[in-house]
Amino acid sequence: MLSERRIAGVERRLELALEQLRDLQVYAIGVRQGVGHVWGYGDGPGPPGPGSGLSDLFIAYTWAQSQKDLDSNTKFLGETVGYGYNGAHPYLNWSGDDTGTGGTEWVRVLLNKSWLDGQWSDHVQVTGGADWYTPSHGSGPAVMTIATEDVTTGAVHVLFTLDINPGQEITGSTSTAATIDITFVDGVMGVTLE
Image 1: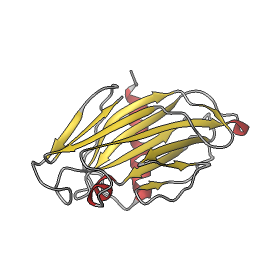
Image 2 (image 1 turned 45 degrees about the vertical axis):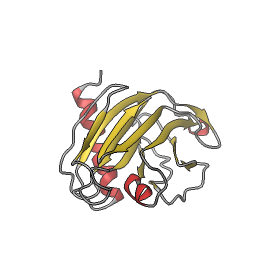
Image 3 (image 1 turned 90 degrees about the vertical axis):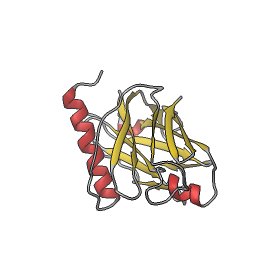
Image 4 (image 1 turned 30 degrees about the vertical axis):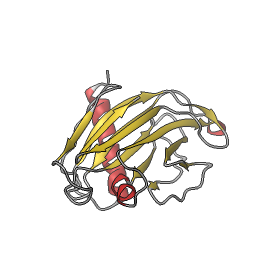
């Protein structure tokens, strides 16, 4: 179980990462813990778009001030972004390689746009993970935060806060810490972890 102080720190880092992503007012934020938790919401039947119930996914990888250079990898629709991978993807916005201590790398998965573009219908998966860049001597646990952001209001809902145990790498992260299943059926979005 995460301490209240640690949860507050993760929430603050997530807020800062979202502010870097775009000038955003965070309207709602909360914490849900636990693997296998189902989170679903929506405003009824209808295609994605403003007010549809299909939000974008936001994943943040954070690490302690005592550690340096965690490299993340996030895969969606067969393509991966992160250090050592192609940084360009039409549906993944990656923050870039943070080589500092106590840092954050984040990815915004454009679920709404990819659905509207016909890239998936009612189910899609996103995987995420991280490894320490060995020459920087980082080690130990890190935190992976998975949230949704309403494409209309900007409201953020933290769904999962996971302690992860990254491995070591020198050419790009290959570890998978979470497989995220997204469903969108009858205007209701569901998010589960495998």
